[in-house]
Image 1 (cartoon, rainbow, N blue to C red):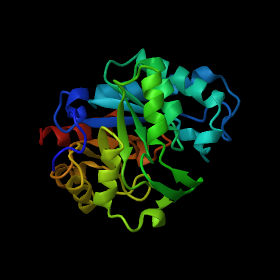
Image 2 (cartoon, rainbow, N blue to C red; image 1 turned 30 degrees about the vertical axis):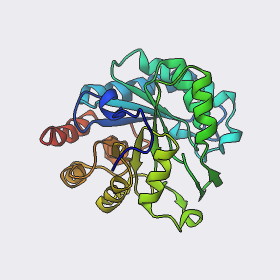
Image 3 (cartoon, rainbow, N blue to C red; image 1 turned 90 degrees about the horizontal axis):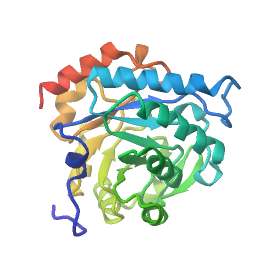
Length: 278
């Protein structure tokens, strides 16, 4: 379909030279201020993130997104404080110093402005925002898209080069509020609110993303569409027939659990399947 806004470029191609790029995930251990932070040295958190990033890079991924994954249960955006932003920034700096591939940031739950602040501070290329347009009922309660404020904040900090990766149908939530709008229409909403790349996700972390959902998102947008959940080597051929790339987290970890360290052998196995389609 034709672009909804003038001047849009293919942000996925601009970020990653490889066709069908794979973005690996670093799920940081709990940061100071989070319920499960054990009070230990913060350098251990940063070292764990750096080890995972190195395993992902050596395994061949095209980019890495850094997430405060261990902070669950996650705060609402307005309740995310300076300890989380500081810890996520420091950990991201440690990762930036050991890998030389594009980095992104996600601050859950749905904290677009903190993610942009961290991204600007570390020189990251992109952020992921789970709820960019409209609203839905989440584990954290009612969450609304904050695209207008986020884009103004991005402009205010001189971060226009930071690309927005926006989920269309968000994990861990009920979409009764947008039940009168199809997934394709929600994709169009996210593009109209000036996202750069759209994400099709499953119902929860690790659940496979249905190919049909990817196709629905693609039908509603002119933007690149990547898969955001549940990718395994076996699913690559079917998903990549529709999608333009993927974010892969859980499957790349030891025993396939997101809280475990990255397993470089798993990364290499997945990237071998991706290479067949490039």
